[in-house]
Length: 108
Image (cartoon, one colour):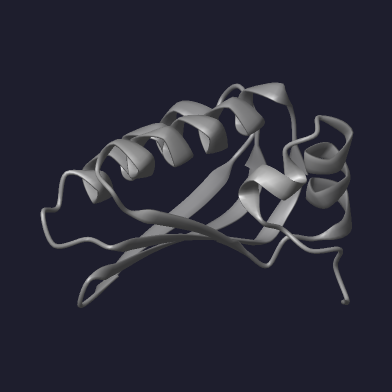
């Protein structure tokens, strides 16, 4: 079993979820739950998911990010991915989702 540590911060109309560990089939549902909690806040305008501490992400982690984005769209909020490292960026690019999430190549 892998470990993903997550913290949720609320700052006005912005919610920040900071992740540290592996975003995989064991941890993906946790991100979906946190995203759901954030999305139902009526005053939330931006959900930022900080991936700087994510060392590994598989298809289940990617699916969790897609669900978070869909939740934000449903609640008219913006989803931002920050701290996207080279490994996570590569998964996003290989799946064609890098542009959809608005991510940039690490270091640019």
